[in-house]
Length: 148
Image (cartoon, rainbow, N blue to C red; front, side):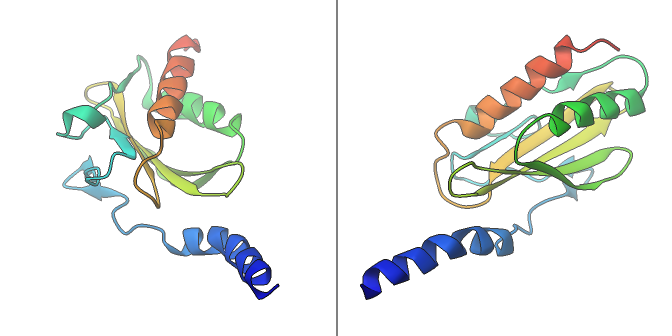
C-alpha cells in the first residue's frame, strides 16, 4: 500500500522536478548556441559533434518574416510553449505526452548568412530515442515548405 502511494507521488512529482531542473546551459555563448552535452539526446546546427549535427534553416527575405514563419510552426505543435524570445533568439519548451518530460529547443537567426541555427536537447535522461532529431527534421521540413 505504501509502495503504491509512494510511486504515485513520485510519478506526480516528475513534471515538477523536470521543470525545476531547467539547465543553465541555455542561451548564447560567444554569439553561438551552447554546445550539446555528451549524452546522445541533443542535436544542433552549431555543434562540433558530428553525430549531433543538423543543417540550419535557410531563408530569404526579412529575418522577422522568417521568425514569424517559425513561430507559426511552433504554435501548431502540441505541448509546445514559447519561453522567451528576442528579435534573433527563441527558446521553446516541448513536453512529452505521457510523463511531461521537457525538451528545450532554441533558435538563433544569423541575419548575415540568412539562416536559423537551432539546438534541441532533452532536459533529463540520457537517450531520447531520436525524438529531438525527428522533431527538428519535422520543423525543418515544414519551414522549407511554407512560402515567404
